[in-house]
Length: 396
Length: 91
Image (cartoon, rainbow over all chains, first blue to last red; front, top):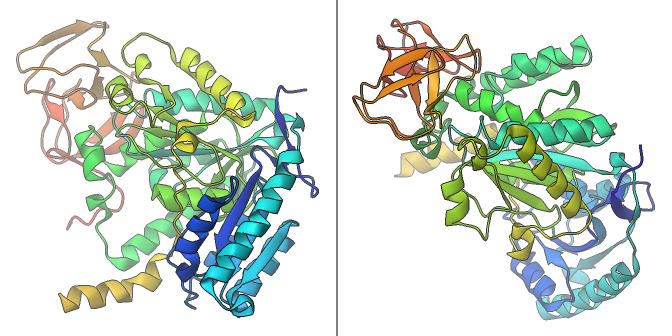
């Protein structure tokens, strides 16, 4: 079916809904400079992070996050900033393998000074920005749209208003041939059986159950009482009492579509349909996983409110309750609280979310984009940080 | 406007759509509930008598269990229920 979607067609056949020039520092020491380069350029964006090339069990995950993020089809081009390590070369090679074609590596050792690096990177970024401005959106099939489903700061209305309304929009997009990806393993624990029952084949159902069990086992292994954090204090104030309750509400974002497949953190969905990706509950880390998995647009529902956005993926914020929407209108794009007040039906709000996704996909800027919210955080696995945590606790 | 939202016929809790005060009487959808304690919007109220250890059902699904007996009209939250999963409770 033809769509009203217009997107940027990349050389590798993928579709971008944005045309960013991304400044990507591959060492934490270059993070501040990356921001300065973006600010000094004609429209490039940058992320910053705290990774300084540490080699531990997380290395493959980190390499994959950066390379997937770089190869996201929303990027027109990438300017890597490097200090000259082998891991950085591996990240760039991995990004190329994932389809990144237009990039430059600005390496500090070759240039010799931070100021030189800054000037050189701005010059390259501006050339890319000028080239990017020549690119035109062209009619795109629905399969060009890869939607990420996210919630954060959930309250008891999340599972009744914003999440099921997003589910309505997601189902409609999946039906049309788009891809929709649900994340946050912590937040389907207790609802995985419902997703498994919708799996297109028993193998996919088994995988999602196994993915949650794996997470549950890792938490039990660490001996952590997750109930202190899931539900969080904010969730509890909002009326959520147990992790299962939060999960049953969170899973509503994925509507009722059949579950096509299950993805590891940052893995790219290979076909259209509804997918689940193994990501952490932390919103910004999970957005990094979505970016690495080539998701090109995100809808983020929230009960408590959040400024979170992404440098490369437009992120539409939907409030679960009207008082929160009215309190921070410059952060929230749409209000779904009207459902709880009997003003609108689920279907009506679902329609509004669908129309907003289409408008934003076609170029309309989100509140997070207008506000310049470019959050990024690497997701590290538990086990590598436990020792550090123990040392910290012992020292205090 | 409705004060309570019952999400599934199997549920033993309902979601409060407005702040409720102790003593409020709710009559809707063929149910009659006297509110026992103050309950904030979005929080849960027992729509059926719940015994200690019994499952808490919302969206037609089990979301935990009662750690104390819960009367119809009582606030259902972290003080009287616990999740079943990732529990560190001593048996």
